Image (cartoon, rainbow over all chains, first blue to last red):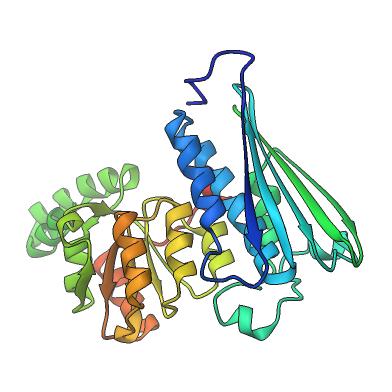
Length: 148
Length: 155
């Protein structure tokens, strides 16, 4: 398994825009990330882990933020997903990491999200999860996936 | 495998018992699987997308309306049963490499969502039964849940 078709030392870099509240397009960025990783020959397990975590992070931008970006960086050793948004920020990151905790409105829960599993999912899928957030400004989530 | 299990239930007496023991050993290593067409028949359903892919086999299923729970606990290659019909259900199935979605109580997703599923080669089935009964029919027939309690995206 692994990212096979890139020469040592080279890497790829893509950025996709995500718009808050645009549920019709929610998941498009993660879908493209998934396809790119498949095209470069990454193994199905790492592709799935990245896709699930990226999708959760993208949904968070659509649900909570005004707008944001999903950035994919990949080389032979690892995949990094950075999701950066302008939004309300996360007041208490430790609390947000608790399974079941959610501040999503009922309209989002009716679509099957807001169950409070987003951040725990991102953590269990990734090798490393790093969250930086400033209240009223925005949030940056960085996830690395080691190509084990 | 589904066919084999049905055959065993038809065998009675001592010979049947012997076969059953052998089969149980076999089942512990593998799992009972069904084609998507069999899944559709078990729920008295209708395939509305991906008819040509209905010969694919599935060995596990998940019944859930919480997409984050699906993302956390559903095994790749499973079939998802849900009462939701929005595009996020199809996106969730895409991320997890699921093979099919069964929409319960015959709720049909809109054309755009069906088109998305088509492009992702997902099979969509409408079941006339509610979620509990749809799941029950598949479980009773031998289709197992996603019992791996670790994070299944790693499976």
